[in-house]
Length: 431
Picture 1 (cartoon, helix red, strand yellow):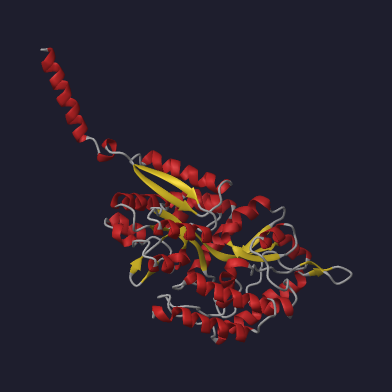
Picture 2 (cartoon, rainbow, N blue to C red):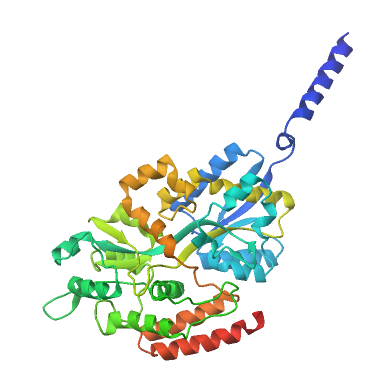
């Protein structure tokens, strides 16, 4: 009798195990997730909290976050790891890294994992402006995550003091120059104590800010296949001339180059009345500005608009099928309306789907921070960020020539002719 009971119990346990889901019987799928930020700081806490929440609802997946430095550091580390046979399974890298990752055979299309109607609806939910840097030749290679546009922050108190309407930021290039002149202040010796405008131009992102001039001037810098650029077109040269003239002719902006990190610091310290930078700086400005400030879209020349920017999720080719599927589940979960909204609120980046803006959490946030809507609304007229094959070398070539103009080493026409010729050489083999 006792042997009979033991056998029955054993069979019962075996039967129950057979009915349990597969994840409860197998070891969890482990993912290495590269995220572009230095170790420590508030952003890592936000990422860690999101990962913990994901793992709680997906006990079959374990995500190890690796904080891999700057975007440039992160793509270099990911590709080095890939060549060494140990790449991450998932990474957030610049949307402009797409062609580089394809050329290195490092990633797989997102379309491989889109099977259900729910998946298809999710993929179709992203803003089209963000998808322009996420797909090429009929395939989707990245999923928008922490994305941005360039916006103009302005100090409303300084506007009032200068006799300007604090609720009417400059909407055109002519108005920008006129307002910036009124906002620029000098001391008795003629030294500038406050600039009307600062636009970052040093480092790796000069090309991106340049697109905040070329886009409103109705100039597109490259094709969607990433193998042609149009840097020497008249509207492009005209845009660069305008950027140069803001410093040297109109004298409303510092001469030379201005570092990326200097601009928000100067704005918060009252050294500039207006600045152009990423909407990703919104949370920083909200927390640290001791004055009332506004956010506005890029001033128009012929049209409105800005380049998009920021990072996408990419799934790596050398991951196992189980890891790739798990990476897809994590990327999809992080970009649900509720999670995309929370990420936007926590960081200042633009929530990447329209549905995210309809969540109660985001609607309440917009009630408190109406400035957040500017970058979203600008998406209707935004364009793809500059990106090509051999992207790092082509971009460096463009940056070097932009900075030569801003330091008065070249004329805009000569610089863009040189950039075009150099880019044509680099891209010839990709045509």
